[in-house]
Amino acid sequence: MSGDTNRSDEIANKLRDEILAGVHRPGDRLPPERELATKLGVNRGSVREALKKLEQLGLVATRRGDGSTVRPLHEASIEVVRHLLRVKGGINRPLLEQLLDVNEMLLSGASYISVERGSDDALERAREVVRRLARVESVEEMHSVIDELVDIVTITSGNLVLRLFRNAFRPSAGEGLQMLRSRLSLDPEGLREAARALDAAIMARDPAAAEKAVRSLSRLRREHLTKALDAVEARTPRAPRRASDAL
Image 1 (cartoon, rainbow, N blue to C red):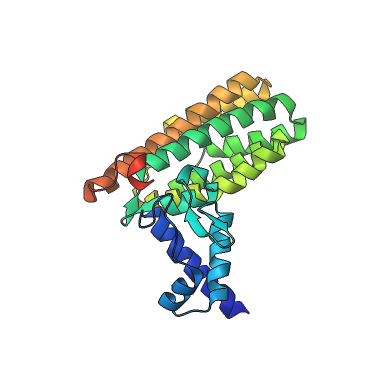
Image 2 (image 1 turned 45 degrees about the horizontal axis):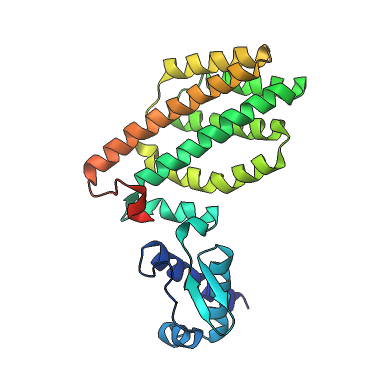
């Protein structure tokens, strides 16, 4: 059974990558199950399971007797973002920037809610992490502490939907960071300034000030990522410049 599952995963991954690469365009019908099974040297059951996985991702619509049709990418699940981040051995910069936009909006809004509604104990834990953030000595430590802070903020917000969004975005953000990690640098003074502002906002229970401080922290992190991406693109200048290039 596990062999069949692994095989269906492999088929789903192959078809997913072909769809995201534009081999199969929105509105195209995928080959029938029998044809795919013959072409790939597998049984029809494995193909059927693979197509179900693609349907769950929102990449295809399957109708009994009518086969599977590729759906427009904007109708797909958020889970496909992590697969779109990689392009021709590099990073899809427009998509990464859009991911950072959404991350900033969610995190700054979550900070407002957390400071407004969080318990004293929860906010004190957040302050402890913020004070550690002001003392980090490496890029790895910075991202680790920021991730810890994001977890506390999303939990303290008490918003289940926000936490689910966090779970959905975490793999994509993590892969983007991992791809750029060797090029990232640390800005201790900028980090200390942002951390001090956030600590003061939490201590004063000022939601608007907390939102502003977290937005500044997000943009500081984004600036580091942008510089790292510039360095990567200097070596691979063919990376796409428009989001539509990879969509």
